[in-house]
Length: 258
Image (cartoon, rainbow, N blue to C red; front, side):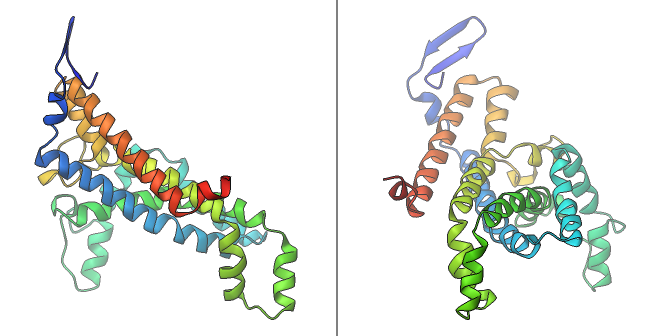
């Protein structure tokens, strides 16, 4: 389809012209937004859940309650989560975030219309709030699979908590880290609903919330240009595939398979 011009009842071969239409500032903005969103969500949603999983892995009543509270946001739909973020970061003085800013001596901001980096902050805050609990579950599973005898032997040898974390916990949950990063790459580049909800289905100012999938939606469905939409999809899949292969290679995933 990416090499075709498609209209109802009419399909014609157009070569690479659909790909040539992608050489625009709007496409590069969508690519940049998706890349930085993926980067920041991985930078936060890997180390933070690891720390919390280490802190909460012991089976106590308090830890069980905290785990449940952190997991609840993942059960909320993106529509509800995005609406909550819109209310929290609303532009009026009564919004919670602006109220806190004013209490600290700052001024109210119109977060949704203030451009970058505020738009990216909102998207990353939404992702962090919604997905931290899920990643904690992944890392808890990895930590609980580590034989307890390793920690007992390390304690007898005089290793403190910090040494045990860097020498035992982190290396042995490496497969879980690879898994979380891999699904985060797919999730980051496929992000669309969050941006769509935050700007209520409208175009964000200066395309600060435009993502690759959002651009595909605009060209393929809103403008009924399925050929260009397919070209965007092919480029997106290729980028995700290359980044995933590089990431897996850096972590030695293929070396371990040999």
